[in-house]
Length: 274
Image 1 (tube, rainbow, N blue to C red):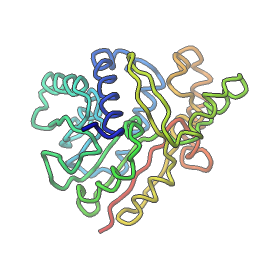
Image 2 (cartoon, rainbow, N blue to C red; image 1 turned 60 degrees about the vertical axis):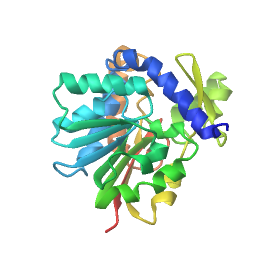
Image 3 (tube, rainbow, N blue to C red; image 1 turned 135 degrees about the vertical axis):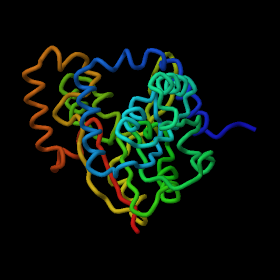
């Protein structure tokens, strides 16, 4: 029996990110804009997370966020479909002596009903567009309520269907890139470490619609609306004064219309109704 297409896509993504796992941190940890993104996301989370929370992390990657949560006094169950990423996470957890604070599980976020730790968490967290690797985000979102205590929170970082910086590439003749998100209903091909898989783009309205029955919206922030996306390599280092100007403006306008909807990402948080 052949696998469903979404399972095939997940396996392809898992292979790609497993290949990249060993050099992932070296590739991305030193970039000014990536540090800015992490700082913004963590500041956002700290507005809502309660002390000593139990966190379920989806697409946890090499464990940068899991270890950060642990250092803040939380416990984390870090999940990912990539074996290579999970191996890197385990190494980091052992090196930091955080085995009591961080557990891990090799599982897709589309299979959360099969979690080894079937219990209620205080917080669900997914960073850096891991959820864009599925065409079944609606099913993933619908699984959250059963995994959260009443009053529990969710923070997701997702790629929307429109990014101002990408759209501006229209004026450089890069039409395919400028419009790729807008026409992505069947998925857009991504390429990592010689492997190909699809990703999808979702506006905040999609997430709100599928969580509205059990959750109330807390806030939406645009991320990399004025600050360029991190794939414009070295921008923060080469143009520090321009970067600082754009950063200050983005920090000021991040929750305002239209900026909260037109970034490379958006950060969206919800609270489960009691």
